[in-house]
Length: 522
Image 1 (tube, rainbow, N blue to C red):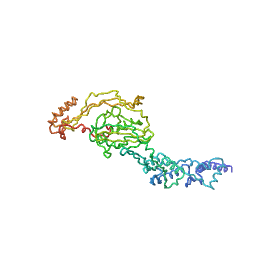
Image 2: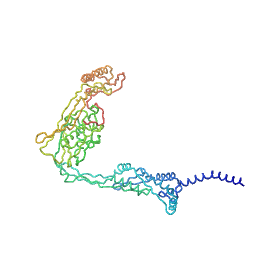
Image 3: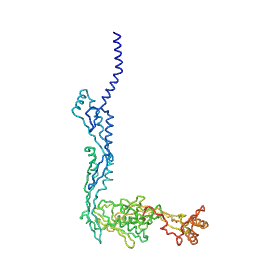
Image 4: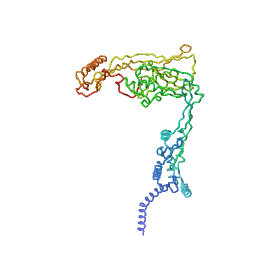
């Protein structure tokens, strides 16, 4: 009997060793599962582990990212986007931990009560979402703002010496900041997880300029004229075109004017022709060549008007239509612009015109507040000059022997521009406006060397080796008169056909440079 009892006890111990850990594991698993009656929106979390519940909700969030949200812009125009486009993210992920801990924390009474409460009323959590405000801003500015109706300010025109006021018109635009807040609140609080539409915040865009304000514009603040009498037809056309594009501009107090924005793009469609401009120390043909005479003339009128200059650059090389340091270059490839601000208390009007005898004039009108006995003038002070002491000769195997184009040398300058103010004829102030440096460039020539005669080729190359442009010109002229039927002769002795030399054996200087992007419209 005792042996039987001992055997039974031993068997019980074995069963305890085997069964109890398994029961404990199952109990632990049950302990880790979310209780019945707990929901996230309409998704039941019953019997799920925390990881399983999170995966289920993330799948749901992913499934609603493709819903279509129609944004209503100005005049009812519609832009369709998705929550994914707006960077929608699930923001209150902490609700999962809270849901998983219901009935699992506190003492035994608290746990029992929490479990019983779920039998009478479900615990339902709501998802909350955030958006990427930068992405939404990009949607508003890139897709919705195209339907904005910008206000048209009242402007001035000058007819027969008198100003005419052109009425403005109010517009409607998207209130960007308010619309972003509206979209954010919608996804955070109101979205039903379905396709929907949302009306953006639209505000009135009021035009500027009353008759009373614009009637103040009647005084000449500054005027300046330059001439382009030595310009060819293409450069002259560019100057006239640029002037016309600026003429008639009305600027309100605080407005900044960009000359580049006003006269660009430099295309044939915008009225420009190929003409000489500065590029890398050379004069090359480019669309809009000569436009810098427009900006320079305007610059000097602005200085005399004492408006605030916010950006100005000198040319790389000296120009001849104003004194050193009185120029203002525009360079598309280098990002150069001439800008100024209307820092007066009234609107200003820019009048620009060109004459038949090739002058360009800008006059700035506004409300004069300076004393009549006060005068302003500007003086150029040359600090130093640098004279080029070499000549540079280029050979071109595509041009026939005898052709030569020459570009003049440019003296280098360092100069300052001074603003001098007088009252009753007495100087009261002297202020340096800018300091400019212009690089020296040597006289250059491009010489054609294409010929089928080795002796002629050797003769022109011998002349080039002297590095004396005048000597090369004499030799080229002589060779052009007796040139053999043209062929491209290379130093290695190879030959290729080439076009005949022009009459007289010379290529006009303005025809030699290749077209280039607009750099400095000299």
